[in-house]
Every structure is written in C-alpha cells, then in structure tokens.
Length: 313
Image 1 (cartoon, one colour):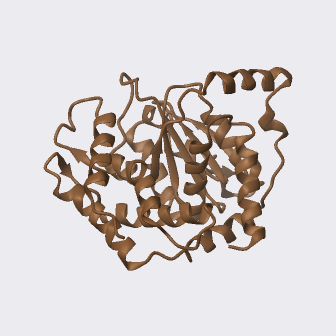
Image 2 (tube, helix red, strand yellow):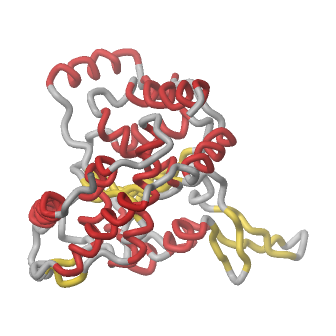
Image 3 (cartoon, rainbow, N blue to C red):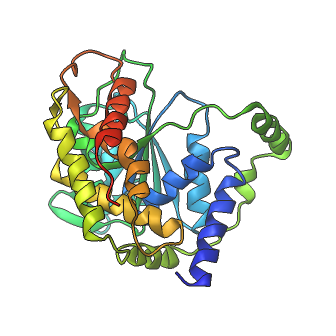
C-alpha cells in the first residue's frame, strides 16, 4: 500500500472517530463494510449513536445521507420511489425515493412488514431498484446501515434469513465509557459536531479503494482455514443450518477489507478470526432457533468453533 492510500484511510478513520468517541472497533467494522462494498446491521438499543455514525461516514466521503424510519405502514414505494403522472406532459415521471443515496440508514428495519423489508433486497444485492418494470441504478458507493432494537418484540417482524444474509456484519455500538460520554456532552454544547465534519475523501476515491481491496491476496493455506471454519458451522450438531456459500464469499471479502485497512496486501488468519463472529453468527440457525434470546449463545458457539479450528502455521 502506498503512503497516500494509507494517509486517506487514516484520515477517514480519524474523521469518524472524532464524532463517535470511544468506538474505534465499531468504526473499523463500518469501514470494513464500506471497503468491501457490503452492508451493516446494528443491533442495539436506541440513542447510542447509530444515526450519528451514518452521517459521519456520508460526510467523510462527500456522499449523500438518507435516513428511513421503518414503520408498519411504510410502503415499498416510500423506499424506492414511484412514478407520478404529469397531466401537462401526458407522461409518468419517476421520483426517486430515499434509497437513492450513498449511505442509507434503515432505522428500526424490523418494524416494517416483510413486503416492505423485501424492497431493500434488490437494492442491497444489485445496487439497483426496479419500479414498474424499469431498473434504476443506485449511487455508488452504496452502503445500507440497518438498525433494530433486540429488546423489542411487540409490533416487530423478524428479518428473514434471506434479508439477514445481505448484511456483511452484525454488530452492536454499546454505551460509551464514562470519560468518552463526558467528552461527548461537552462536544454537543454548541451543536452537533457531525454537522461541521469536512469530507476527507470523494466518492470516486472510495470506489478506487474498493477496487484495490479486491486485489488483496489470500494464500492457499489461509483460504483453506476460512473454508474449514465455515464447514465447521455445517457439521456442528448444535447448528441446524450452517453458513452458506455466500457466507464464505463475504467472509473472504471482509478479510480482504480488514487486511487493507491494516495496511497489508495479504490476509492473515487473524483477519478471519476477528471477523468470524460478526460475519457468521447471524447467518446460522441453531437447534434452539425458535426460542428467543439466541444472539449471545450463537456468538459464543462461533467463538468456540474458531478456537477449535486449527490455524495454519
């Protein structure tokens, strides 16, 4: 990696860390998703900085930010946009919805009906939307940050496996340490710090970085280690449905992005170990899937599989 690329990545890190205090690991995961060209699911209680995170990323890359509040009465067209008839022009004109942005915060995604949730599937997978038979490309780069509150169940619609599989990572933001919370309060005395955040990259530079991530090498022994770990989820007796082939692919992409973010042009086993839980835990179904409160147990199970899988020398 050349010095200029490393400088850009460090500037991006510092810019976001400057407003999301004390959450360097969360920022790193967000940047991994951005560099891999994938999406992020934040499962956490309200008020811990999820909207702030989305705004900070968008401002840092000179991108467009949109927030969509998911509710039971939200329609697919409220996300994708719709055609409206113009009588004076005697034609239908397409009006883009809020999905047409570089960074989209899908807030409380599990409050919308499955039909509305599915409006995101094509956008997240293909970076495009289809309205009444016509396809419209979305801006690039394109990052969806979806949130859901794990403590609320009434009035929510659990995300189906096909939707969960579209998220590269599932993480929590969590509460800040007391010192960082004090600093945060002092920062907000004169307004929102994120509103004065200046871009450190352009969207074109982000696309160039995403292309460079694809060039990061993974040696055969490390690739076999990745496959061993994924296969372990399929053979584990406590797991009813193991990680899919898509899980293998996105773990590969995430490992490339983490290595790149660390300034390396090659993947090491540490990259895969660090990402196994946030990449794989939401993609497997345990034998006790129908019972609530499975997240901690599933993540502990993935960590155990990581510990039990031999690491290449």
